[in-house]
Image (cartoon, rainbow, N blue to C red; front, side, top):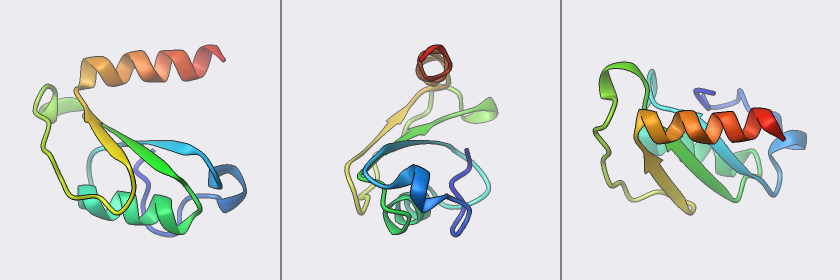
Length: 81
């Protein structure tokens, strides 16, 4: 879920909105990795120490940044489908 460059499977990512967790690499770089893998959007989710702190960034594709609590709801929805 870190969406590191080269880590995303283009077969699974192409045409999809990808959920990435914050950490390790720059937020905008995660969007670049998603776009290179064929993704059409990104949901960036905080975790741990970042919790409720969201930052607006100029991404290379449509993207949104969620708090940890809202991100948990997104992940719960994904696991339920």
